Length: 237
Image (cartoon, rainbow, N blue to C red; front, side, top):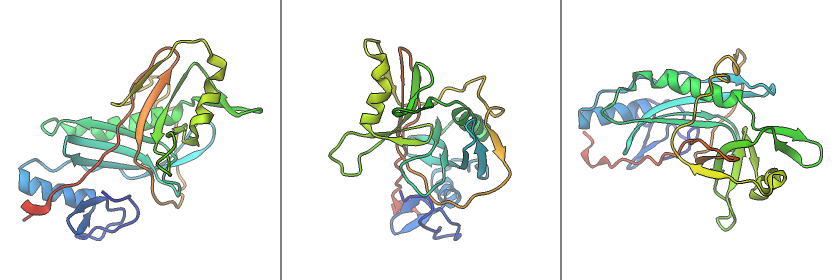
């Protein structure tokens, strides 16, 4: 798999191709048509076009949508397109290969609007950031050196493991429950109405593919796991 934004599709020439098949790189649509031809699976519904979503803090996020078949099932992904691969929002939903993916575009859009519409961080004049409530969710990002602890992305902000520890300092003595993986919970009070689309486009490039998790004091929910997508080209027609 390649990073969206760095390659053009070998078949149709579309930008942001991200599926590697032997010596070729395909866009999601061309890769899905090839998979349908060799597996008998129906072609997937197309993903929504990218949109800009404004959060409650006034920040604007260019969100790209993807729907693709992974070895373990159908994956629908919304990811923030930007110059920094590590930070930004990313939401992922999954469906079995034999399931009905027709609702995935609407479910995914609602989930990413919900995620952007709820902020876990608040500005803190002493430490930069503090927790707005007794819950925090985000994504784990591997350390660039490979030797240190992971970093975290919360509300689209990239923080170090030490930054996360400082966020939790006021809760010393509390119990907590850390849970990783699966799909994001949809907040009824922070859906598409809380994070509204913005009409003006912004130029950007790629977004990171990383693990997700949620920590609450004392409860938690689950977020997404990153895709690793490679297909053998031996059966390609």
